[in-house]
Amino acid sequence: MDATPRPIPPRASIITVNTNELHRLVKYLPSLFASHGNFELIIADNGSRDGSLEYIASQYPAVRVLPIGRNIGFCAANNMAAQLAEDEFLVFLNPDTQVHPDWLFHLLKPFDDPAVGLTTAKILLLNDPERINTCGNSVHISGLTLCRGMGEAREHFSKPEEVAAVSGAAFAIRRGLFKLLGGFDEEFFIYMEETDLSSRARLAGWRCVYAPESLVWHDYKLRFGPGKVFYQERNRYRMLLKNLRWPTLIALSPVFLLAEAVTWGFVLRNDRANWRNKLRAYAETFIHRREILRKREEVQRLRKKRDRDLLRLMGSELDFSQVSRNPVARWAALVFNPLFFLFRFAAFILVWW
Image (tube, rainbow, N blue to C red):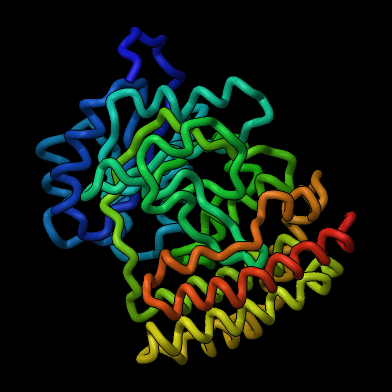
């Protein structure tokens, strides 16, 4: 890493949501405050009962704590904390991360380009520091979102580039843009919120940029709790219905049907005990259809880009190895990815709006 002294970056408000994460804060906070940069830290606490608030008050009294008192979700807690921020840039950082001393400088540097609205770090695996967790997120043509570069060597993805979505573990956004977009969609509660925010920003004419020199280590393991599939699938449907034009949704209908086959296959193989979560996702989408359509109107009012521009960075290949490395995953890739490629190609022939 270049040791040349760097100018002080602009002020940023770093926002972290904490829900009984004391065991992580004892590593996260020393790492963050040992790094360089001109920042304030706001911690939105979702009703922790593990001594988190007492630890912060005694060891880091300068941290601004927003004690919410109950778990209102990742999205709503971030939005509440963002209302307290006054700095030009908002940085959203997970408490299960640790940072390189120069991470903030490099995360904010791409904002020198006035067209850049969001930036995201190179996120490495805390338990395997020479391997990538994600370099921005890859968004599939179906809306399924995966880690970009997962498991690859640290030196890969070495150049700045535009990405389909930032990673919610470590990203920055212009405060004015966050306010313009209305922040995170609080109905998401958790999961897919950063993909939705990125998509809305891109439709509004802004770029999402990956900053490879901004290094963050993340204590990441792929986990599937009892409600994860429900939130991921429900929120994927909400995002697609809010952001894409109706003719685009029709043009992509073969993609969506194929994606349903894939996700049902995953659920029945890997999350069978919670298979009803898929049905819950359908039901919730239908029940809240009016509210989704209202938010759709808000998104479309800010639109400056075509759906074709949004689809340009959405790929056709699903990395099945991220959820399983058994032969079934390899066969699924051989069967489904060529079909997704053909359907994406056909959609690009049709979608010129």
